[in-house]
Each structure stands twice: as structure tokens, then as C-alpha cells.
Image (cartoon, one colour):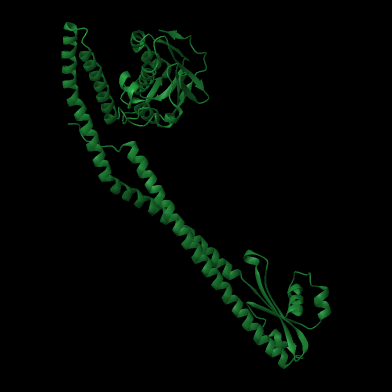
Amino acid sequence: MHSAVRTESPIFTRARVKLTAWYVIVLGGVLVVLGGSVYAIVREQTLANIDSGIKLTAARAENAFLDDPTDPNSVNRFSRSPYTVTAQTNFYEIRSQSHSRSLPDMASMWAAYTRGHDHRSVGSGSNELRIYSVRMMRGDTIAGILQVARSTSPEQDSLSKLFGGLLLCGAAGLVLAALGGWFLAGRSLAPVKAAFEHQKEFVADASHELRTPLAVIRANAEYLTMEQPDNVELREILRETDRLSSLVDSLLALARDQDAEAPMQLVDLGHEVQDAVASLQHLAEDRGVTLTVSTAEGLLVKGHAEQLRQLVVILVDNALRYTPAGGHVHVQVAPDGGSALITVHDDGMGIPEQALGHVFERFYRADEARTRESGGTGLGLAIAQELVKQHGGRIEVDSTVDIGTTFVVRIPLARTQAREPSAAVEA
């Protein structure tokens, strides 16, 4: 049995980060709506209280003025902090100075003269004034215009403090939400992680257990083939045994997550590709396919040498499987900006357009009959995609039926030395 993985798998780390991020985003949205609502309600209530005080002061000053319009102190005695009260009976002056922005605000007075009353804000921030002007009537005659102004500076300071406090509390809430979300996401993913690890262990153990009987079956079939070289059934047994062995190896590779937790090192990508292609030259010769490779020197990537070789082997093996005798498979490694490109091109049977979006799915086969005949398991490209992702890259495919297929792998460079690509090495 394999020992339990102690460090968290990257797939669960990504899921945990996403769950935490969504938790923080949702809670952040709730806090924004809640904090914005609290601020808006407090602000509106504060302004409403200011307006109520202004109108009450205006009503008292108006009554005092109408009771004794000849007494200048009848209005002035209401002009005490925080209110400034002014009465104006010179309507010509109000009209001529209606564009003035100083107190008394003649524009507001003129609006009150024409409409009966006027309520407005002048200035902004700590200099904002709330102004209320009202037309005073004695019978059917306009006795004058009364104006009450009040600074909102104290309230604006309080609102600013409230806003700052809401921001501080919101930020603290988001930090706590991130910590709590990370913890809760870990707890919620724990059963899934345990089931995933058990599944990996089961697949790995089953693959190991299957290797021995498959090896025995193949050995016996090869022995019988030597005695009966024309036996079609024996050749079919060998072909199916090879296919099952390939399937077992693929399952084992998926279960192991090969060296996923080992630290990455600087790898000469061109060198590893050369080695991988060289190891497949005999297979290409057996199938009558020309296999060539050209690489640029000094392309260093951060990764695992064994995984990169496996990636190239999967792609080249896939190309050889679906390229008929007399065909050509070419592998190229070249720099492209801050990345290295691995291109595997063949002039084989191609992939139908409707299948291109599924080729990286596990166990997907565009053509069951041809895949079984070639010995494919439907796992190779899925493994290749996982290996590319582990190296922070991406893989793309372009194909035309009966013309050929091209796989392009893009992996970030650790360091690039600009050199001309080496000459192609042909099988």
C-alpha cells in the first residue's frame, strides 16, 4: 500500500483558494451593500435633522418678523450658531444680486420670491451650507424674504469618521472572512480529498497487481507464437495484452501524479526532447515512419526532466500511432518570446473537427475501431495535458482529416540564451 500524501495536492489547493475567494467576494458584496445602506441612511437622517432645525428656526424668525417688522432685532436674535438668519425687504437688490454666491444667498432668495420657498445646498465637503429661503406674506402683500443658512461641517466630519470606520470594519471583516473561509474550505474539502486519495491508492495498487498477470500472459503468448507463428488468435492476444499494459501504465501515471510534489529544477528542454525522440526512433522504424527533430540550444525551463520526457514521448507516440507507413513526424523546439514551443507535427490521418474539443478528455476516442487497432487507451493526451499544466504551460491542437495533426506545447522559459536552432536530426 502507498503511504498517504501528507502535503495538499495542487488540485485541492486551487479548489480551496477558489472557495475562499468566492466566500470573501460574497461576504465583501454583503458588507458593501450593508455598509453603504448604513451610511446612506445615517446621512439622509442627518440631513433631515438639519433641515428640520432650519425650517423650525425659519418659522420662529418669520413669526417674530411679522409681529414687529420695524424691529431689526426681531430676526437677528435668531442668528446664532449654528444658524445664520437674514431678512431682506429690498426686492430690487435681491433681483440684481441673484447671481451672488455670498451670504445671504440672493439666488435662493430670488427663487423664494418667485416660487414661495427655496431649499438648496451650497458648497461641498466641510464648506457645505444648507440654505432655506421663504417668502413672508402679510395678507396678500409680500413683506420680505427670510433666509436661514446652516453649515454642515460638524455633520460632515461625523459622516467622514463613520465612513472611515465602516471601511476599517469592512477590511477587518474581509481578513477574518479569508481566514475563516480558508479553514472552512479545508474542512469541507477534507472528505473529498480523502476519497480522492483512496481512489488514487486503489488505482495504483490495482495497476501494480495487474502488471504481473499481464506480463505472464504476454510471455506465454510469445512462447506459443514462436511455435505457431501463423496463429491469428495468438497475435490478437499479444495486441490486446499490449493495449492493456499501456492502459495499466497510464492509470498508474495518473494515480502517481509523478513527482508532483518534488521541487522543480532548471531543465534543458532541447536536450530532454532529443533524448525522448531518440528513444522512439526504433518504434518509428518498425512502423515505417520517418521521425525527425530540431531543437534550439539553451532553452531552460523550470520543471521535472522525467515529466518533460514523458510529455514528448506521449505526443510522439500518439503521432506515430496515427501516421501510416511512409509518413513523417517532425518534432521542433524553439523559443517564442518568454516561452519555449514544442511542436509535434505529423502527416497522418488527422482528427475530425468535432473531436478536437474532446481529445484531452480521459478515455475519449475519436474512432473506436482505429484506436483499438493502434493500441491506444484514450489516456495519453489527458496525461500530457496534466503534465503541461504542472509546468505552467498550455497545449493546443490543430488538425485536418487526411492531411495531418499538429500539437503545440507552450512552456514558460526560466532563462533563454538566444541561439540558432540546431540542425534537424532525422531517424
